[in-house]
Length: 283
Image (cartoon, rainbow, N blue to C red):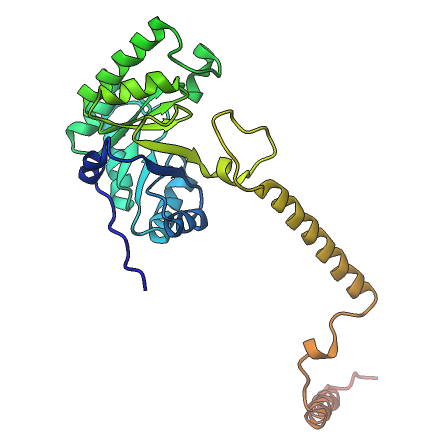
């Protein structure tokens, strides 16, 4: 029997920086978390931005008890105090760290309270109105701004940062210039972790996948097949009911015939007695 693996700590991750690239998956269900741990995935992330996601986190932790899981805080945290409350709540439930795409000002407040924080660099999906969906850092000006933001996050106390859709050669250089763990999401092989969403790995949607992603299965087709099977099964059930093929004798519970006769006779006798006891109307 395999011994349970040791759960990573932030200290462990820092010790591994520059030594090997860790695998890293965003999971959305206990089943995915359990599968990721059983498969040997190093790190996991999950959402923590809705009541449903917050209620799900304990189940993810229970499904993958030996895994380092980062919980993504809600977008638009209004104050450092709110961020700190959310961060501690995630840690209390079982998260190993929290992801926060807010400014270094917010990140610094959380880090000051010893909350392990992952920041965000590069393309931010919620901010694409400013940049469009594209790689960030292909020009000298953007690369300088990216480096400045990296140092701002580092100085704020983030132990790690997700680096999303940054040119791979720039990402490799940036990773060599920081003590933070850099998590590559579409930013090549030169970072400390290789990050993908489970939806991308499993092919769990019908849309075209992002350029940086690779689908290893086609769960969308499997879901369509299962839905067709559901419909077929329900139609067969309807037909069986209409044609009196269901329920069959094997599905039934039967009362002993003599006891049934005894019951019917007793009910009939009670009914007859009540009728006899009814007052007769005056004539």
